[in-house]
Length: 274
Length: 343
Ligand SMILES: Cc1cc2nc3c(=O)[nH]c(=O)nc-3n(C[C@H](O)[C@H](O)[C@H](O)COP(=O)(O)OP(=O)(O)OC[C@H]3O[C@@H](n4cnc5c(N)ncnc54)[C@H](O)[C@@H]3O)c2cc1C
Ligand code: SF4
Ligand code: SF4
Ligand code: FES
Image (tube, rainbow over all chains, first blue to last red; front, side, top):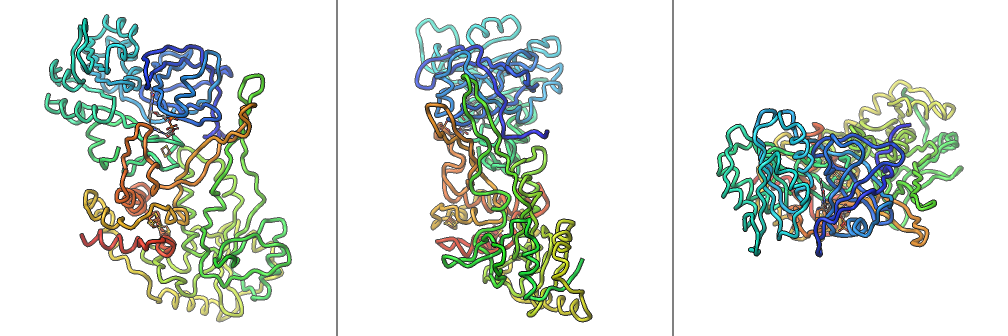
């Protein structure tokens, strides 16, 4: 039987973590495949998740490819599908098709320093890269993770961040002043300038809201990072995920197939439409 | 395979295709469009072009991907892959025929679309060469086609007045001709020459000129930031007619339609969508990479004359002229390309 590219596999939610509260709350879901028909993925790839009756949404696979038992997704409550996820309980069934898109070229970065810069739910797509890099600690130089949230209660993966400090430098920031806050106060791009990581033999990987990415890239360039040393992802609206519905088009690329991961040197050659 | 078919024998051939669903152009509600041909009825090939294109046979405006329901709390999915009868479409103009291989590349490639191919594999396109351009907006020759192009067609018929010259191009086409064997006659002296003459005359009719086709991609690339696009799109009402009627536009939406909220039963449905609608690219956050009409017109034209060329070495436009003729406010893709090329 040939695969029907539009027919999802069935997954079951086996864990739910409430990451942040509020109107745009984030929850992390652990999903298993009860029918044993899961799939392998690479760092940076995503999946189309279904809530039957509500529709589908493209969500980054936030667990490391090294984790085989389940896949993890961190979902911000935005609209129909994502709200249905937020209303879901452990044991509920969902649809999954994928994996879609390209990957971060982690193997090409052996021996180099890695600087991760995430904002908000934009940490999710780069989290599997961080996890995999840490798991292969001896392959890389210094690992630094910048992460900014609106307030300290908006920080994702809080307990995992504590663990991460053992193998990476962690630079957290919140947007507005808070009592007892130990990290940086201000936006992520400013924290990046403040700590000024060296571009020597380094790769920078950033993901977050479009406006954050824009300023982070400007600042990375000011710090001396070349276009080939900067990686990011594009989050265009998506429906099919397989390069047919035309929605995620940027120039000649269907981002769902050719992206979402791009180096800044590749991205610069595409029309600025994302 | 080349044969001659007397005009009055057309009906005989169609009747011998009785194990197929046969469609042909029919005039109703003041437009020509494809309609099912019932056994024993005549078909009329005096049409200019149909309002809808043959893409509808492989990519219908609405189709169900699968049904979902819950059994003991577990979702059960039933794919509703189409299983059509072999289908033969008569009177396909060569511009529409040329649309088909372009659609094939989109629905093929890395991820094959099983819904498209279930229909496509069973479809035979019987083309009809244009004895003269049927609309003042035709420009097939400017985009590498011709009024008797065989590209994408299984059979090409040429109207010689009292008879048709019928050429089987693909295996499917030859099969359809063999099915109607008794209706056909042999090609005799002079038939070939007459067919060529009809083709030559048709080619010599003036069409909308497009200037230097090879220079268009670069001109579009260079005009990306130009105010020209907003200016040209000023009157656009974003109705999407230009893309819905186009034989090569293929963008779509996917949505769930709930049949019963109590049982959780419903369908996942694909429907046509298009880049001229404002919410086509709008994120839930409100961020929209193509928020204005100008950038959306630019996308439609760029996709057809720049991005598709980069990906597939050919335009995603076959010069059928529908988007020009049917646009309610007169936005004209040839004029748009002309202005972009001259800027
Ligand atoms: C490559 C990629 C990775 C993503 N990763 C994550 C993630 O890890 N966590 C997360 O919370 N969100 C992620 N998103 C965004 C997420 O897909 C949208 O927020 C979500 O689809 C909104 O769906 P909804 O049904 O709740 O909204 P509605 O407004 O009810 O539905 C709109 C529909 O439009 C589409 N859509 C709307 N906004 C977006 C958007 N920003 N991106 C893509 N499609 C959109 C979807 O098909 C969605 O079903 C990602 C998007 C992309 C493209
Ligand atoms: S048909 Fe004309 S008015 Fe309608 S979207 Fe196309 S260009 Fe705009
Ligand atoms: S773009 Fe216009 S002229 Fe070209 S194929 Fe489509 S409808 Fe026909
Ligand atoms: S999501 Fe359909 S083409 Fe990319």
